[in-house]
Image (cartoon, rainbow, N blue to C red; front, side, top):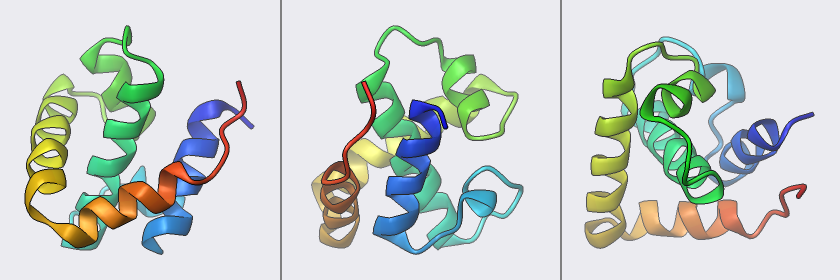
Length: 97
């Protein structure tokens, strides 16, 4: 299991969205929010990763996924208490070094 798997698993535990949905094609609000959180947390863990690498970590090929996810996550952290709480719950899970 990689660190990315641990991060996606932590987001799963925090959001209730399964990893297959986070990395899959679904675009419901709950899945999108979980994907935003996963990309944001992966960026925090791996700040030197390219946007394409971030997108690839959640099953996407286009760097625009990461750009949008990071923008949306930053906005939601400021404005949406439930999203912020999901991030807090996800970061409470340990990630292997």
